[in-house]
Length: 388
Image 1 (tube, rainbow, N blue to C red):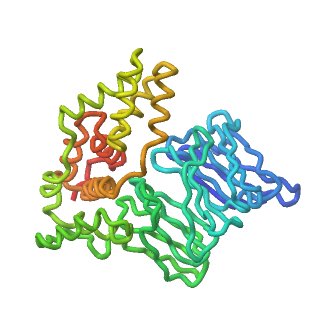
Image 2 (spheres, one colour; image 1 turned 30 degrees about the horizontal axis):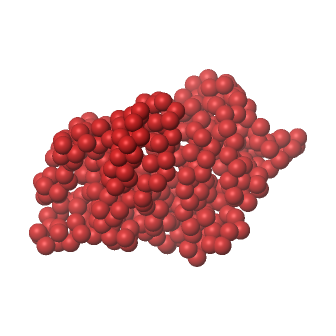
Image 3 (cartoon, helix red, strand yellow; image 1 turned 120 degrees about the vertical axis):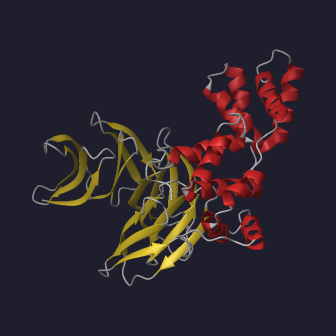
C-alpha cells in the first residue's frame, strides 16, 4: 500500500491521503483527523489511482480526480463523507485541481484532444457549470495548478517544462518562466504573492521573482509612473503585470491613485438604484425605460444587477435581471486598469495603500469600484505585521 497525494485541510486539523492497495487492487482517499490519526471518511478512488486532490478554502469540500477517469472530478462533502457533486470536464486525463481563494471557482488541468487545447478549465463548484477556460500555446498538458493568495493570478506547470501565469480576470497570459530540465511536479506561492517556488524531477527547486526585481520601495519619475499607469490598461497582460509591480514599488502610488480612481457620483448611484427597482414596475413603459437605461450603462450596472438578484426578487423581475446580466458586454480595458490598480494597492502592504482601499470599499454597493475594492480587501492578509 502506498500514498500518492497528501493534502492538509485549511484548518490543519484534517489530512486527505490518496491510497493505493496494489495487493487488493483497492484505491481510495482517506480523510483523517491529524491529532488522533483516526480515519474519518473513505472516498472510493475508482479503477485508476487518484491523480489530484484539492480542498476548498473553507474546508467543506474535497475535490478528487482519477487518472484516465474521462474528465470526472468528484466533489466530496468533507463533513459527511458523501459526494456533493460530480463535474464532467473535457479532460482525457485530469492531474491538477485548484480552488480559487474565495472558493467560487475550481480550476481543472490535465490533457485533452482539443486543438488548440483548453488546457485549463474553470468550473463553478456550487452549480457544476463551466465558467471559463484558458487555452495553451505550444503545450498540450498541465501538471500543476495554484492560485495566487489574492486570487488574481493562476499559475500552471505545463508539458513545456515551464511555469505559466494567467490573469484570472481577463484569461490572458501574464508571464512564462522556464529553467528546469525536467518536469515540474511541485508548485507553491509565497504568502505575499511576490514569488513562486517550483520543484522538478531534475532534482532542483527554483524560486521565481515575479516582481521583476522590484521587491523594495523604488520611487518613479512622474514620466515613468505615468507610463506604468497607461500600461495598466494594455491588452498585453504581460506588460500590464510588470506595470502592477512597478506601481507596488513606487511610494507615490497611493497618493496618485487617490486622484485617478473615481467612484460614481451620488446622483448616478441614485439613478442606477431607481432603474433596478423599476424592473419590477407594473407599468410596461417604466420597465422598458429601465431596461434601456441599464443596457446603456453596461458593466457599470453589473454590481447593482447582481445585488438585486441576491435579494430574491419576484420571478418576472428575476428574469429581466438575468437577461440583463447575460447581455453584459465584456469588461473594457479601462475596467481592467481599475482592477489592476486595486491589485497594486493590495500588494503594497502600506497604510496608505490599504487605507485607500478601505475608503473605496466604503462607497455605494452598486458602484463597480466599491465592488472591486471590497473583493481586494477580503483577500488581504491579516494586518498584524503585514505592512512594510
